[in-house]
Amino acid sequence: MTKPSVSNAAFWDVRFSDIDFEKQALYVMEKVFNYGPWKDQVAIMRFYGLERIKKEIVNASFLRSPVLVFLCALLQLQKTDFKCFNKMQHHPLPWNY
Picture 1 (cartoon, rainbow, N blue to C red):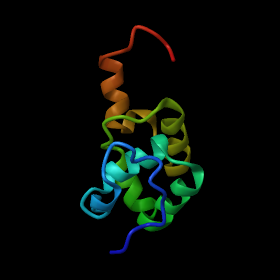
Picture 2: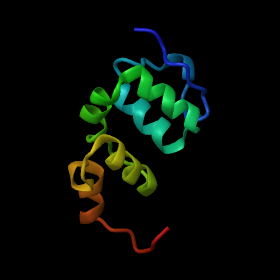
Picture 3: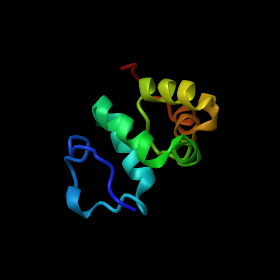
């Protein structure tokens, strides 16, 4: 499998050239949806396809609130389908951001 055409903007904390886009698909999806520009998000959707994203992204450990809402609409899911949402409900932050 080749690499998607994404920038390294969302991957400031790792060596971009070392990312295995097949084995680390969930990691890539989380980083790009949370921190990547729109064109990178579109590239990820084309590269993995919506069915694979739907299967993998529900296991994300963290998704920003607007990203979660977007993915629910895009993938026709509920917030409660996401592991990160259920985890947030058990450990709410003391402030809203």
